[in-house]
Image (cartoon, rainbow, N blue to C red; front, top):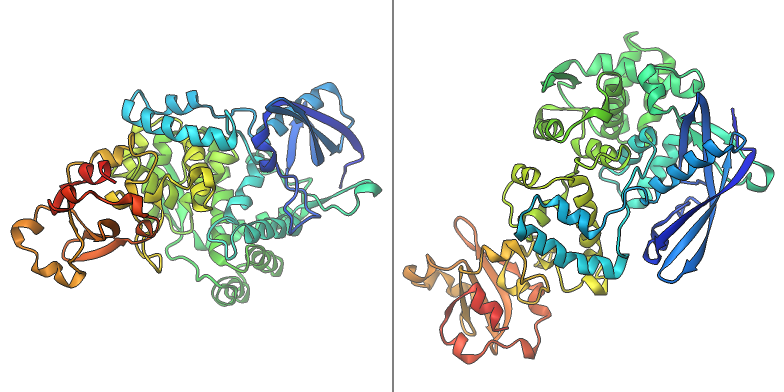
Length: 511
């Protein structure tokens, strides 16, 4: 039992004012569940600390934050110093990202430096002269945190609910003083506990560990070796829902005597915790038990790239989940999870064709990801400061079927167009522009013209409205949403329209 009977205040200094909304102690839909989790050792003493409130002192364009922290040990100076460091990691102050950081990511490539420095102007205006980076989550806590983030049904609400489910099902509940007894805080083993297989202080988690070990033995029966490290993998993935899991896995193995009733129970509770989704349970099992085989703290950029590229062979694993917790739980700044936002950013603004090239062209990808993610999410939510940039990452047609990508219609109004690397590679491409033709007329365009054009843009009274691109065989609507935002002052001059075929550069220069 862990009793949080001691109290201290921790003060951190010099936070940008723009960080205040980003510092979370609770998720609104789970007000009883503090989410800033601190669990570490100091000179063989297990320290559990729970920040329960925060106040701010405003000093010009910065602020100082004071955290009220409950803990299980009398707060000596070494303990206060350690908890201060942990909080600075949780809020991203410990290794914050600046423009200089971004420039250092670019390995002296001036084109990348220019576009990312241009983008930084918008980052800085909305989020301050630096943005957070550090060990946002304690290492083991980060694993269920990001398993829960894999394809959540209702976004972040689902993620946080699954995290709470996991911690409350398998953690040891901490006891609060009466004043704070409405809160729930659960403690799970540290990374070093797991490496040593020491669950003596965690009887519930010990039972989960036994159940997972049995399932790992029974169902992760194939192996894949990557750069000398062998990973046990599934021959076939489990079916996703709980009923199939009981029929094919837990119930089946219990009926044949392969696992005990207790193992069956804990396996099914694990699936329940992750919203009754057996794949998430498998991802947790593989990510967690591999700590006993490989030290995540030592994973290098090159090793992780090989691991990520082996994804199709790694049944029962999620490379993205592992990337997320290595980046944000282990603060490995060379690890980057590749999602839609990252892929569209390296394809379009950076003009990079492959993931391997993206890996090779940059250092500190984990920090660069934070910049890309922040800009992309701000653009996605129509934040005013980001509204006129990164249209290439957004959908361009009704039904969200096509990304706009690099195209003259979207790029003409983007404020990053002067430095965008992807656009620079398209400036000499040709665009057919017309007020009169329709998509039905495309097949009648002379072959001598059609082979020399990349885009067709339909105009209304010389105002660009719809943009078509060509796949291997057909022309398709790529972007109409950008056209909705074109106004009468975005009219192409008659001298340009009369040319019928112009370059992307001419199109953009004349909007």
